[in-house]
Length: 493
Image 1 (cartoon, one colour):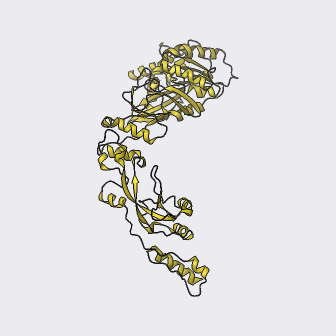
Image 2 (tube, rainbow, N blue to C red):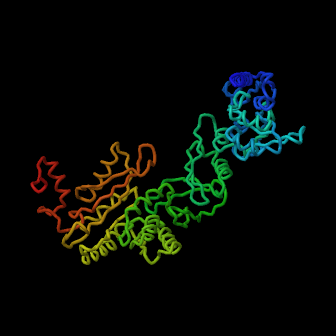
Image 3 (spheres, rainbow, N blue to C red):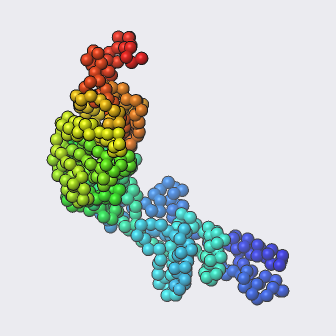
């Protein structure tokens, strides 16, 4: 048995370096044992891929489109067709699927590319296309591969074959990199809003905008319209102008976020698909029976999930289109009886609706009540500035901290210390110190620009008029004056 093991080792070693393997182990070895350790004789391949040759010389790689597409303005898909040489192995038809399954990590990986080629000279065999970047010779196969070949009586010999690669087989970034001028940024990212792909192209990409739009639509199933933002978000209605780069001009779309369906006209309302996690986070703080005020509700991504949790919701948006789609989405999700929708300015909503409902809540408050109040202010461009509308909103007497609502206010910051910046700005507009507040990063909007969320209990000295100090001013304002004069008021010690 020791001799058999030695010969087996030697056989594998010879095979690895391309020599003919032994078909007979020893004179005393049985036919069964000999057949166990026998290998088919095959020459060692010196196959060298086009990818290796081109990459080594610094030229475009194997899967780079033809150089003639550089600078193309109108998309010509046929111009991308090229023929390359790839490694293949010949396999009997009856075992083709077994081999494909076992060699799945060795196969060529390209979009929409058929990895099985007919052999015109052999009807009994097919050719399997291997990955030219990993299979450069027969030595690239490991022991497991060789065991499969032996079991299926397949020669691991590698052949070269011509393969036609078309526009369909190239990836988005490969196509755009080949078209755009050298050393220019390639934009392949976009926001998906139903059937719409929303892009933010840079100035140097604008001459190719329609071509880029067509490529994005081609490569992303379900996208039937590609748009580009052409100005900043309107501060009044939170929407932006856009142009259609490719596809249909239908901007009425449907999206699903956290299990809830929304419909809206994307060209007339604000929707950010990157905020789904944040919508879900705030909803996670809510309990059945809570009272929720959504000052800048949009089409309902905070209001509707809150209503789904059996909260009573008062939702407002100044944009008439947002208000229209908010009502539509409430009916669509069967929460229209739980959401009270308004179409007024945010300050007016605070000073009328929130003031009235807070007063009613306080008057009916008992210590047995378990529900809480939440105020959501998602207008990061200016929501912090609206906090001054809460100053002395209620002229009634403060009775208990348990009735104080929790505010979730969003804002942008370019400061080096974003948390400190948002907190100080919120305090300035409220006219009160915020204790026990939390500030968290929501997302990076642009280089050196962060979207933050500050959550806090609305301070009693900001909300109630009876909390004025002896000078008739809010405590926060008085503190700042005292700091400037170098003194400290005794009431703050």
